[in-house]
Image 1 (cartoon, one colour):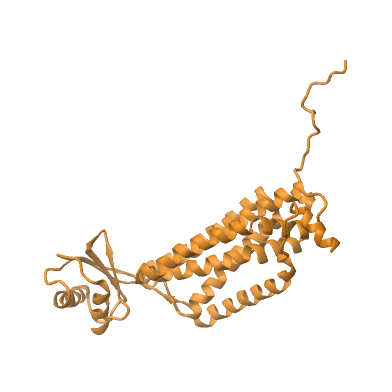
Image 2 (tube, helix red, strand yellow; image 1 turned 60 degrees about the vertical axis):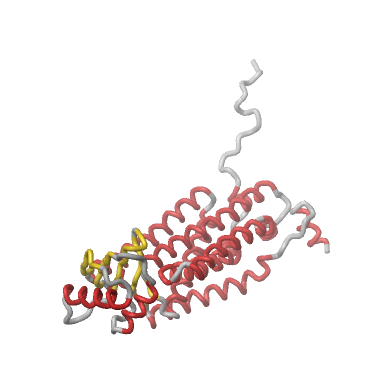
Length: 322
């Protein structure tokens, strides 16, 4: 009882949740999920979308808005596998993207697409543009997306290490990589199509999770400097408890907005919203049981949070001695 009372006193008499008590179990579960994600990605790979594999892009000008889901179903019925049909610019401009078809040049392909649109949706539709995107461009996009994620993590490592402390920086970057790897593992497991929106989701996950981690670390740094009686374990639990309500409210409202995109945003935003929803849940948990726990195990102490040079009070005042 004395120990519990002491910890509550560190939080001005309010209850302190012992998050780090299950830190070992949570960290082991996280590591198992990371390893499993790498295994799944190695065995199943990814279902690359047209942004990466290349394909044909056809722009169609309509005389009136049409049901894109119906056009997509009509194209599937005619043997065009997994076409991407979306508006761009206005409701009367439609972009159709599909995988390359052997033995069919652009003129024949555009004619077939236009016939399907004419017979099932809009008799006055006309093709504005048709072009082929080769797989070499797709490979460049994949490489650029991977480099963007790696550079982002390196910049975060430098920033957090400069602003806080290298142990916290290592925990933060490991937690961010943990969120991205597990999310990619889930995408690979269920063979969700990977396009540029998934890359955007990965970068969004890094940004969101970093924001949550920075808030927690900022409170830890503040408490390490203010609270002198507690151990690092106790001070971290106090900090996590104090930021809990903010974390839950931020994660809850963000997740609610993402779920609205998932259920009402249509097929084009499904992959983005699914990935982001998974990342938000992982990022919220990793801020506590990966970033903070890892920093604790790496030996973070109060001395590491104190300014390197503390000037004595009145040191900048001129001496009154002769």
